[in-house]
Length: 114
Length: 116
Image (cartoon, rainbow over all chains, first blue to last red; front, top):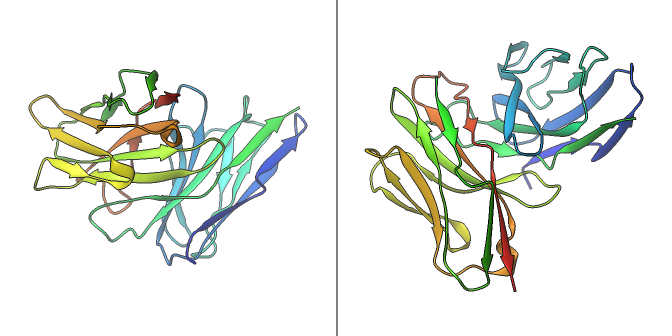
């Protein structure tokens, strides 16, 4: 079955540590996205990528970094510069070609900073 | 720039009652509109979408939404809810000029709680 996988489901980190969240898709989608979700704030865009080896900052990119070396993979690194990293992180993708722009979401990773 | 306002953060409703979740958007250009549902600790699942054509859109699980251009609204409705509809619902908008990446702007969400 095609879809998006995120790992791990739960992640704990100590303050000052960098941590990388995995996102893989087998939908052959060109575009991939990372969102952060906080209670009562909806989803906010961190980074997005339209094609391999290219990505753009979203609304809240500070303290985060990404890479897009393969079409299937779009890992997100939460750096120590992110002041309030505890949140639910969602990865999404779409074909990048369809006019309907439906995004497909992974199951999410809940990051807790101890 | 575009924005989405979901007017109710929490909506409690009894089982088998009708429900309406409100969504208003702001955009200077034509838009696509979406409703997503999120169950606890899960990703988002598409309920329905409006691209063009008929303003009444039917989605999964018995939900429907009506696009009203003059009121810039896209309210979600269901005539009879079930306990299993308890979830958070997000309205989202994408404008037709944002390029191939077609970014989505999300509302802050509405928690629907169906009571027995």
